[in-house]
Image: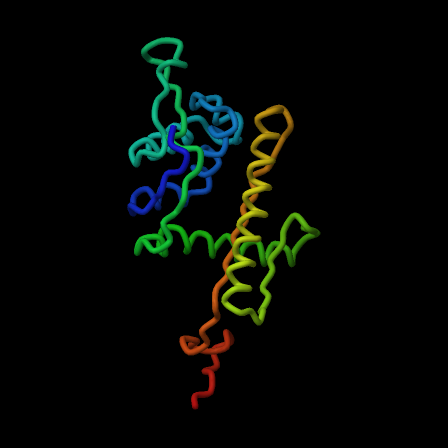
Length: 195
């Protein structure tokens, strides 16, 4: 198994952008290998839907069959090809395949939080900071380390006790200089003053 698989091909980016497929990959990370029926039960999806998503993931090379765990030649057991998957952000297809679905999800989190008592479980933060390049580098490293620590610790906990129900959460971090020269307007249809 690879430690990290870098994803840049459009078909693989589209495959991993799907939230059901993300949950399948995460569940395979927890259990190591599984059949479609087991995955369907674990993530609460119909078995035929999970089978379809498994075929898509296999076609783009994100999962492979694990025949050593099969009961017989007809039994299909699947496993991840890598411990982690990393999106190559400078891929031209990444914007369409990954960012658009992520932005729709972020919009839903933002509007959902306004409708109910989501508390700390749903959080949308947008903050403007004044940073030097060195400070921005330091903050980026701290954010990455924080998310990686939570990811590793909770994956280990999920592997230790698969009976504890867990929901799938996503974290999106974006840190970069804000270039206002490309702004079309202020978000309400008005154009920003020029000059």
